[in-house]
Every structure is written in C-alpha cells, then in structure tokens.
Image (cartoon, rainbow, N blue to C red):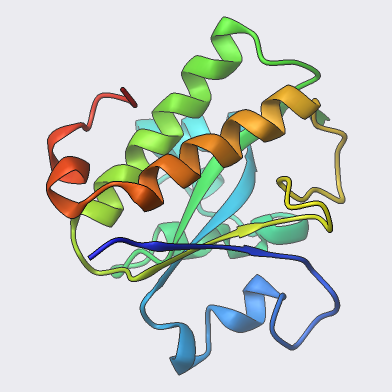
Length: 165
C-alpha cells in the first residue's frame, strides 16, 4: 500500500489544517505529520532523541515537534532553515540535511504504521511557510522528495534508508 501525501493549507487554529489540532484527533491516527524544522533542533534530535531541545514545541507547524519524541512517533521535522532564517537556496549542504531528514521519514513510513503523510502547503501546492522565507528551489526539492516517498511501494521504502535514489 502506498502512502497518501496530503498538502494542508493552514486556515485557522482548532480545525482541519491545524496540525496541532489534527494530530490529536482519532481521524488522523494513521497519519505522519511533517513539520518545517530548524536545523539546530533537527540536529539535537538526531544526536540524542531524548534531548529536550529536539522535542520542544516550536512556532508555526513546528508546534508538533514534541510528537517526534513520543513513544508512537506522529511527527517528523524537515529542516527549512538555520539560525531563524530560511534556506535561501538549495546548496549541496542544504540538500544533504534535507536528504537526512527525508531518510528518517522513509524509515518511519517503512514501518507500515502510516497511511497518510501530511505536510504544510501553500495555495499553489508548494511547501507552506509562514514564519520564514524559504528559497523556491528548496521548497520544490522538499515537495519532490516527499512525493517520491509517497509513490514508493512499501518494499522499496524499507530497502533505501541512506537517502533517496
């Protein structure tokens, strides 16, 4: 079974489109939520999943960051910037950190626990962001990688944990 990728355009708190609300609803128990992370807290979580810095509630859709530290993981961060500034362009180092995050999403999806993958979107279908300005090529790359995961059969998800091919 393939995973359904759903881009969610934030409208308002306390309803569909609000990841903080959605992640608590039984209707979304089969979903993994991808949030826009900062590189510092992404690294803290990767180095030590129990590090409070990598589990702290953030702004915007990163408010769900604590759910990546839950016993049943419900969220995964993909870095979209560093030092409170969005990545302006897709450099090799930016691509590497995004690929590392996507590999973690791949690992989680390979467990078979998720039927849907939610990410923030804007009205044009690109990756959504209201907190920082993210380069268009960065946003396009992240969406492309998430689409590739969603279209991968489960056996392919399980075989490629070291990045996308």
